[in-house]
Length: 218
Ligand code: 5RP
Image 1 (cartoon, helix red, strand yellow):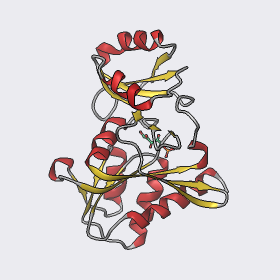
Image 2 (cartoon, protein in one colour):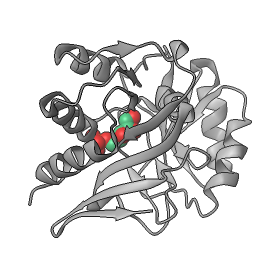
Image 3 (cartoon, protein in one colour):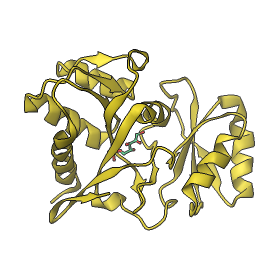
Image 4 (cartoon, protein in one colour):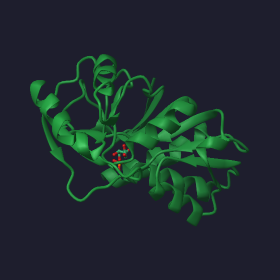
């Protein structure tokens, strides 16, 4: 099966976690696009969705799925999103699509994070995928120096301005063996909007697309 077919498989499998009449949190990316398409085709009528990006909002509206403002919602039963890397503890690197800040906000509203990913995303330890960090532009150089002190190399993602008007640094050379401590630490740095390690908001369930079918990791 191709990577695209695996993404379709897990996008469809995620429907199992969507209750008719509920409000669902929706992430961003090519795997989530498959979930949005599957939801629209399924006939499951949700009360609405809280979206993590302009991209997902436009796709859902185009398919007739009502999109609600996060401020209108107190709690979500489930948040469904992809990942750039996920370890066996459900910790993730996210932000390849530059939507990490809104993704973390919507994930934080949810009782349960269901990650949908093809098997290439499963890792033993986070850090091979360049870590996205959303930053206030004037702080970018100082934050890059702080990563250099940790052995990382931060590169400004050229031409990208996030939905929040900020910039993205992609950091290579890190080995993130303590994701929760790492996330807390980097969150303290002035000018960091969001670090793309999702440890506090880790996945509760991962639907992994494999050649043998969808594997459920908890
Ligand atoms: C966007 C994300 C995505 O979930 C992540 O990049 C995975 O994307 P894809 O499903 O296209 O592989 O974090 O900010």
